[in-house]
Length: 119
Image 1 (cartoon, rainbow, N blue to C red):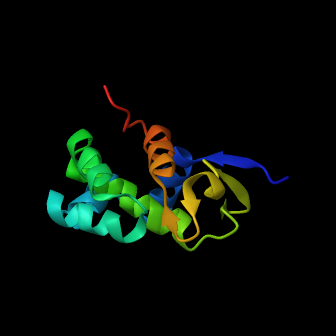
Image 2 (cartoon, rainbow, N blue to C red):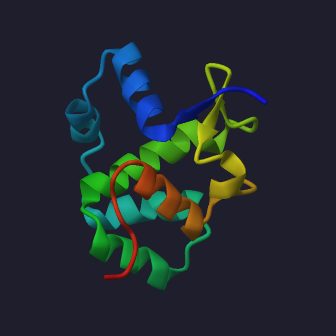
């Protein structure tokens, strides 16, 4: 079994390796809520009411970060590895085929210090 690496460490390493600050990445992705949720709907299996709940609980910058992480680290990364280490949360916990699930989105959010849980 390969060594494991936590998602927050991966995001930090990926941005550092590319010479990008998180703020700069989010500034480049600066979309408003409607277009952010459209982006998220394209890569998820979330229903419209679930997308609306995500939009209510997170800022559009947080949703942009989640979308970036799904694209960069899960969508086309079938083995779920980063530099030979097993990405945590694991791909099979996050994705159903080529779509992120609601539970997967919650797991990614938790790993990045956000919460999608109802209060």
